[in-house]
Image (cartoon, protein in one colour):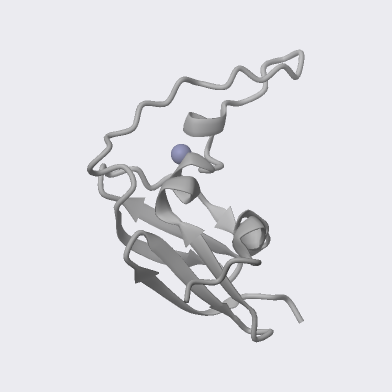
Length: 108
Ligand SMILES: [Zn+2]
């Protein structure tokens, strides 16, 4: 069975995800935005395969605010950020991996 979120909630500046396997992940919204996997944030390889990571500027009050989100095709999470950025598709696997370092520190 593919792992998927069965509940996603914004808790303050964190995204709290409950997974179908019973696990829970907490992701800081700012860290989530900074990990945006879209081409505009991560860059695209040129013909030689070299990737120039673009310089991304964030608005401190809006870029890390989650306005809404969608679940795409049952495999990815697509956030709409307060500054209008919505091209990042986070596969569930990526979400789970991003949350891993915090897994040892669940909020009280
Ligand atoms: Zn992006």
